[in-house]
Image 1 (tube, rainbow, N blue to C red):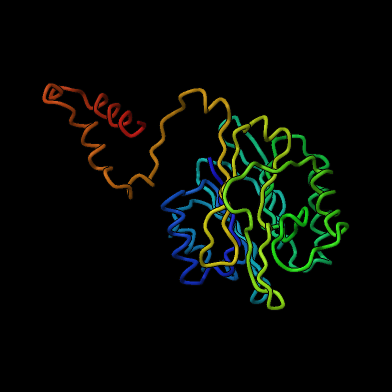
Image 2: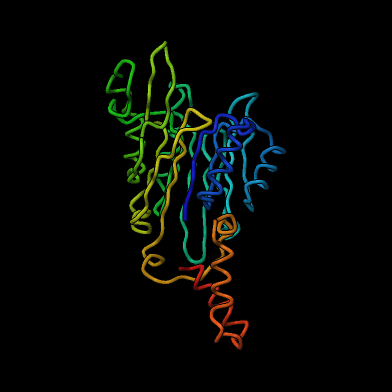
Length: 285
């Protein structure tokens, strides 16, 4: 299972479209969260179709800025609990497994971010089930998450830290370049860790191997982040086989199917069910 989050700085941009298609071919995450889509419903619906997602929930931009969208596959039953231009809070079911997914776009105006932290704290106070929180928070935990420009006063980080503490959230371990945003401010090149993900204790108990990767920066001044996770049960036990349509674009897929279907000359009398089973085994391998 996987979730990809990206502040794309405009989903209608040609380069952004290329980047989205490239990530879809490479990862095809189960959930895709986009911030700053800057697009109305008609365009986002077309984007959903082109990327191959079954479902979408979006928040319209305000004027020429903002806009959020979450896409997901049909194998998940998703309930939208609340949504505005900063937070989309979801309840996700897959089989007997349930967790909460909260997608966050922190306010670019520092003076208004506390309202977002208060909203998250209000959600987290009564949340005792598995919960993952991710997105572009537009905020730092410490000065070590910033390169370039003047150091910030230590007290400026307290509100964000307190929100994470009050919600009992811990960072999901990550790899890659964590300076997820880069840009010029007052003629100074600055890099910051604005995009990240958190989980509560129940999340890490359910998905102890959860991992986040910072991807390459392209077509936006933000890096996408990819969170991958699997329950211990699905790691240790062979689960139900599901065909993954991403395989269709992979080199050699036809040879794999032929190898499973045809086998050797001695398999001329093999039954249809057995052929399908052998194809499944080859694809699984």
